[in-house]
Length: 97
Image (spheres, rainbow, N blue to C red):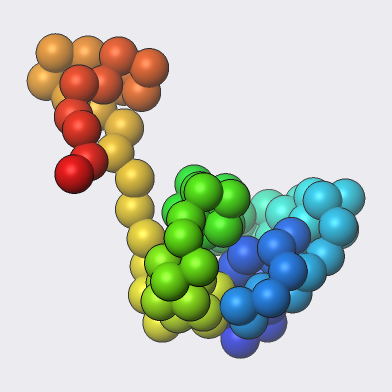
């Protein structure tokens, strides 16, 4: 997916395709037609991993992480569950330092 420009598609620069959000939605729909697992992987990498770095990261963080995430050389992750809250991201207590 990275070599096709599907990871980070709606973002400009850093090796991302720079499509519109509508274009990204159409890409996601077509990938979903093949396999929902692929679409989920693409969506997590794009929206939950690259998105926060793109929107809130420093210039240094963007340069360091986004190109390899967009190419698929690195795969990101996110926290969803904790012992006291189950799958409730709004109740998470973990703090990143």
